[in-house]
Length: 109
Length: 113
Image (cartoon, rainbow over all chains, first blue to last red):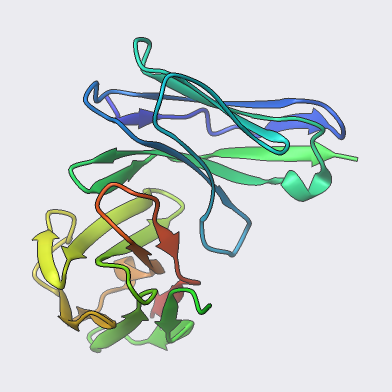
């Protein structure tokens, strides 16, 4: 079993819609969770982190964490074509981050 | 403020040559990470340092790879000898403390012919 599972996509949504990206992880001891965005040919860029169960909102982005289900998600409201990228989830483990393979999001005008 | 700085940005070399990648972390960050990214394997952690000390090098693929961090503001990743399967984008990232968010450099795209 992979440590972090993400659907590779592509996930295609129309402009203005809500994009929902999901991630499951295997390490029950994980305490910190991160979402990175990576545009093609660029480096990963941190967009959200969450430590506690529940929701955390930052502008159009909402991260949701459910430790009992070992599940973390990212919602992007009012999706824009500029949100088209690969989204990587990661959790921390003994000082390092374990990354998923990423989900490619396509926002169509 | 300057982010993580990596050099060179692109490197093309021939099989068997030595390759050295360089990284300058964000000032004040005490953890530094080297990653490799390929389409097939995604983003893989190769090695990380805390306070200039290597903590976990279990991701280093083989003895051809070595990394050093002689001081808090500089690290190198060396491949000797290089092979075509080493072709990838190599990222350096730094973090202010353990288990906190990491900030990535622009990466070095390595092509080994």
